[in-house]
Length: 296
Image (cartoon, rainbow, N blue to C red):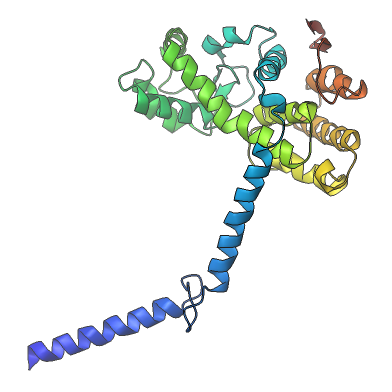
């Protein structure tokens, strides 16, 4: 009797638990007639819309993702990040520039204080165990989100420069740049109806401000722009929209530091926009930090 009673109670509890699970909001997937719940229908709709959106973007012209335009984009970014058009020199670049983000390194300025450098080294180490940077992973996790060098000095900068001589690490930097910055920026710009120049403006802002949602991060800047101007995808004028985006971006840069140099916006990107060069066609001429750059 004791065993039979135990089985009866257990069965009852299981049935009650199952009933509660099926009727709890957020867990329900079907109604009493077996039809999909509102929540599951909404999720399915969102997935379908994202798929359709991705397919629509994929059918658009390559824009900044075309090989020649992508090379140009890296050159313009390098003029602001590393004062050179030869962006390939930047794989081994590493220094603390005193901006509170620890070491800045590599082709798009991965930082020890902003998580992207840590992610890069983690992904690279999974693909290439025992590489020259792997031993610094514990320290990189500790300093993530700070400007500290603890556990990195001495040795990390030399290890970075040495690793950057290897083709595998250069490829890893390119892949992380494309995954975190270039690809998302270009896709979102296309969804907003922007041409090649607009795609570059999004990319450069993504590199400099980071892909976060805070007020001074890329997505925060874009959201503020959308509140003030309609993008072309919503019937807005492209030049007006991009001008508003640059205004908001420049103001954000100055609010962080009133003395901050904003020439990468003022005498580079703004110049392209003022010239009406929405296709970012060459030849190009621009200035950053007072130095003139030309691409024929």
